[in-house]
Image (tube, rainbow, N blue to C red; front, side, top):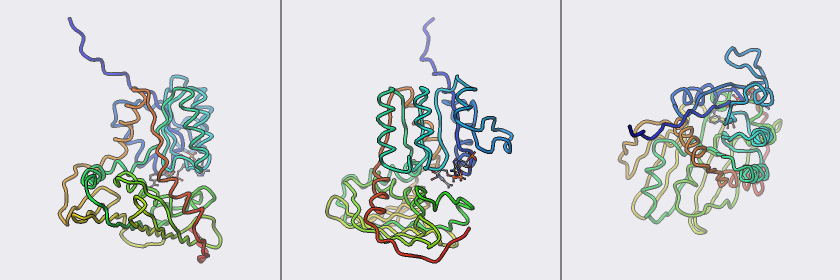
Length: 315
Ligand code: NAP
């Protein structure tokens, strides 16, 4: 009898940081994705959550040595320390976006993963949205003439009580805004650089609540971005790109693509399932992916941005 190709055993996974995105997206995606077997979760509030046994990554690593991969869905500040601990314990690591609170942390982790021959996957979930691949393919042979991002949502609705978002390293309105930048850097064929930024920062907080940025594509073409955390009503998560052969719009966070005003059928939106599938392929293939371009744009906006005081904000 000739054996057929073997299906690899599911990768034993630990999930750290059981908050909104872990419950809304990670857990359903992991449950549907056969490449993974969720072994354990760790949460600082383990006592309050029936399905969580460990209260730290350290405890989880000690209690479930069979875990071979760790997914980190905690906020960006502190994530690099967790990733380092997991890599030093010999585990593959998947990072929520933004991968770290600073570029230096991300570079150091990348080097550590390489040295340990482990997978490090810095995810950008919006790049997996249904319309993104089609947008990238359509733009590949066009001459880009301009573009803009409009990313507007109500922080009280979409990030209720998440005080970390306005603390140092939380990035303020760039926490969702970096999703748009992750799409833009994915679909545009040339380099995108930041030229200027206007940041509105509530006088009682650190992170911007509104921002406007000016970028340049391929050293030539202007691109603009508007990010607003105080936008009430139906959110706008839209990117428009203009070319010598017409315009393209990605809206609903990249899940809907319209080219020359005709909607393109992009199929079902499965961002997190696609992320986990890619992570599995990287673990099995011994590769990593750490693309820091979206974080570079946010870091540059903070470096060169004009900071203006805005009224105080409270959740
Ligand atoms: P969240 O609801 O505040 O949950 C984050 C979880 O991380 C907390 O429940 C907490 O879980 C843990 N944590 C560890 N250190 C923490 C700290 N210093 N402050 C607060 N929580 C801490 O946040 P989230 O919306 O899930 O966002 C987590 C990450 O996912 C962020 O990087 C965000 O950009 C990304 N993300 C969020 C969304 C979204 O729509 N919310 C979408 C995509 C990606 P324990 O108590 O269990 O330790």
